[in-house]
Image (tube, rainbow, N blue to C red):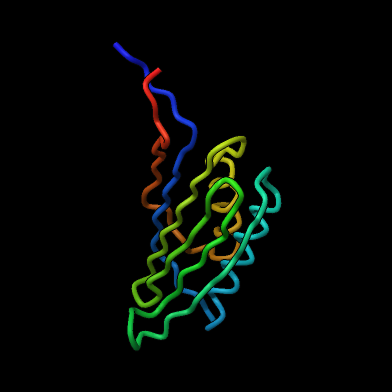
Length: 128
């Protein structure tokens, strides 16, 4: 039997209750994400958040922080209170630590937020 080793991992978190009080929620979440990356061993490469007004796609936003080891993203359906977070790292940065830090920051900013699912998937897997 072959064991599997990985060189990276994805952590996914799905939330409900993501109702933001202002139209600048995309910037608020992006700043939380950037602060989390800054506290991690990863290095930010680029960051961007785009709000959606509902005219061509559902109201909400998408935010991404590209890091030297992959990315941290958030996607929100504001009218339904849904927020999905995706943390993918390889190398020395543990995506669980990044996800834990962001989870705590999100709960502090939005106390009514509820984590309904969290999953970790190994990536860049090889038989060893």
